[in-house]
Image (tube, rainbow, N blue to C red; front, top):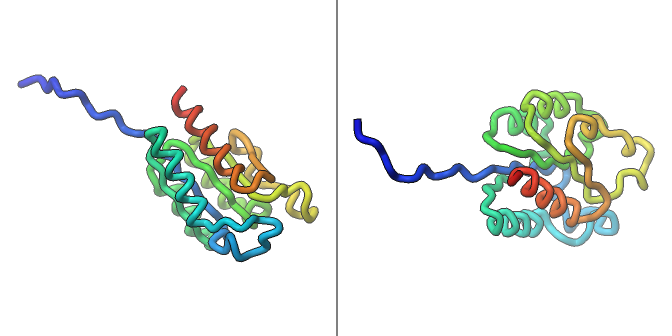
Length: 154
């Protein structure tokens, strides 16, 4: 049997970013709370950062809890960044999906959920992820991506 002396191509780490319900309305919906940027603009910025760091990036947005659960449980990734949006406060299914994967994850929110209605102050997700970044607008996602990249490179 011949030895293959070619260097094996190292697999690039992959980060999955999930945007929950109504985030497809960024730039149109409550701009005083969520900002003027669109989801497409946000994803483009995140893709640039990932590319500069040799990270594979996949983004996904859905208004459907089941589709988000399917994405988490059926996708190939090394790190999850998730904005569960309204499901933050209600979804045991998302919590269980994250726990099932046993992969590092960060929860993000554009608005400061602690400065909003009382029901938004409780997250069913935050205690099963590495950390939570909230209230920094687009920078919440950028900070989460930079943290994920740093953690993956360790």
